[in-house]
Length: 445
Image (tube, rainbow, N blue to C red; front, side, top):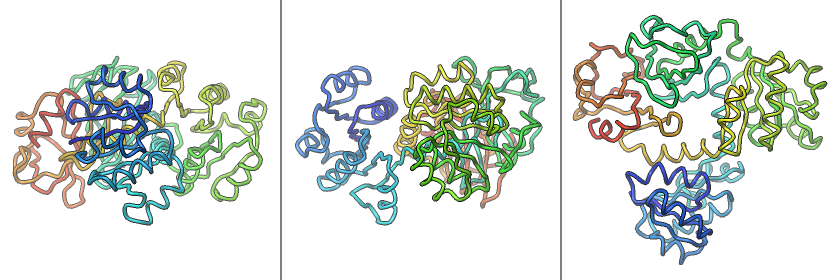
């Protein structure tokens, strides 16, 4: 495809780096030095200028573009870019936005604002957080096959029951596949003799129940489901969405917001949440409200430093798990090093979502592992596929190394994949694919 990206911030750069190898990418940014930086780093075409100006977009090749991605930090600018693109060409348009009001308008009218697909940063981030709530040790969760399959990534501590066990010993679940281990930056596709070590991240694919059972086994004394006690620090848009989504799932979260007006507004909009007006960095308040008894604490303040502080305070008071929102990407590793369980960067979340839309090809759904280490993809098998009408043992021998068939659904029913399982046309198959094998694998599917 010919892809035009407007906005060369972290999101735009991440998308450009993901797409440059397989698509013709042009990046537009007002900063000439930034445009030159991306041209040098990723071998993409760049244009320095205002992406809302017709002349700049025409110079960037808007009339020939197959896709336009507006990824600046300003909602209105992104909407104007997409509107202009719709007027000048036939490209599929994607707008990154933060404010719900634009999302609600877009959802009510087909191609409102000239936008074909709208990606809401705050909502996507909240959804990522909510997916890990209820799964002890989970750092990432993605649904596939209409929710009938889950991919989850778990951190293995030295207290986990499966530590120092082989995959064969740990494989005690009817509908679960151990797809990969992430260790010291490397991807390991395991066999039955591979030993799970403390510090590994284990990627599993299976039915939602089997994934939950595995999570429960990692922390057998941990509360699960809506019985979990969740505390949300900060009434930001992300904090609001986390509370709302959890309330919809039967949770009764507590939300702490310092600003009186915002706290009052949240209390009115979140009937299933308990809203507390206070400074969440006040340790006496946290002790009085028993924040240390929470199963999970979500730090959703507007400051990375404050999110780190309240997360560490919650841990000190005894909270089981902490999730922190981080706007500065270089802080993610720091937060995890000092013990924050899950560190989520909203820009990375939205960049991955946009990349899914552009990379899917034959895939109906895509999840990125550690941004670029691997992908989990869902395909519908057709009669020409290398997988069709063959047992898995035979067909996988013709696929590149680094590919694992994690789950199959047939007529909306889960099918456990084993070596003698025959895949049929019409089946939905969820595969783990190492980054080095993605192009060769998708070409064969």
